[in-house]
Length: 606
Image 1 (cartoon, helix red, strand yellow):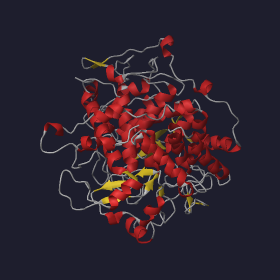
Image 2: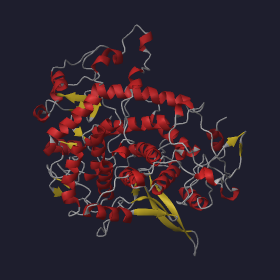
Image 3: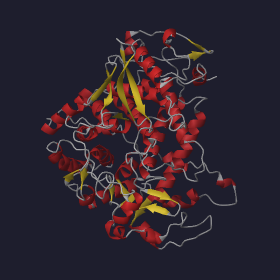
């Protein structure tokens, strides 16, 4: 009987948000540390997780309907974590206080960091970032989305967003400040198990919130308590669930372990459970015929209607990254081996699907231009029944001879030929694309520098939807007008992802060039959220100032370029074992051939 099963059997009813938050904020002050692991290199595929210490919850603080452990201590000075061990159905107590075992084997970021003179822009950026820190029960738990003192109506920009916090987290980690990241990961994990209801319907287990806010509520006339108030999409514009939040959470969890060397956090039972819930939600069976995730419009960074419903590249690249992270971090045992097998199969199928069907270059466009349609055959060349007339006129002259990129979206009879920056960058970082495809993506950006970088890096997508396309696809969205906001606006926060992609491919000079363009303006422009116009010349018409992830993206880019050994911890190299995995089982059948085997010679692997 697994530990997860026993912990879940403790409860029969989900408590309210208020009672959960009250419990966590009170219990966290009484939690005890344990001794973290001392080695910084793990081989999870060959070992079973054994907790190093055991802790019993105070019975007065246990809610009767806890489903699994989400204990969090708010004492950020402690470098070790409590553990729960279940043996013969009983939660046992053992408080480990051996001082010698409390040493965490970690990368000493302070000693490895290159010492250099900070510019005025960097000094100001650090000041803004530190002022944006949000505290819960005295401990830092994240950063607000924007901290503009002149903004009288912040809407939800005063909340901590999971996706927005990632560049802030990396900046803190690269500076040697890991406590805020650890607290963020554990507190957002608590929120994963809360009630999530929109119009009497509850989404699946494992959904992470888009954001949360620390609120103070009155318990009685003289007593107040801080509580976490999450938003799972029920308050968001359009009421869209944040599909990417759980994926970013897993990616950040791996980054925390890689940079600090402290892997004990990801080995906790509650953290392992959180990973499994997210993966189970993503890998759930459905009607889809493809290995890509099917999502609605607005379920990622582009959180408004922009015609990305279906299988957008941004979600697929983050999904692939989260799958690779989970495969690294999951403890392999009887309760997880089936999930690990499913992750391996999905990784193999997804990488083949994206590399084979999403890739476009001058050769592929010419092939599509000559497609025959209405092919009814297992050996069809035009598998998705794409009509050649879908190729937009701008693309013919725009794509360079030596460059290429991954499509924005692919569905039956539909290809979205727009270039989406984040999805292509993360395909490089995660090795979702092949090495030659990675090089071609950077070649395209270099060749089309004025279009993608311009006066402010980087375009979120290219080109903009205009005229009838804008009216039909966006619904005449006044915020997503052509060359503004998500409709091909320029977003400086994308700098850190561009930097990471460039450093992986051995081309840091491209990132340095883009960073120099941004540094000339960001400080004087007061760190805007985004820029408008085709070349990114003007501050966005509705852009918030002192946008935290603009600041953090700039700082993280600087730190990555100054510390290439740290950057190398955050990306993945090609996994050649995935190329030989085929889970379709068609080789045993004479009915048809496996398309993966037939097209394997077409996959460009260096």
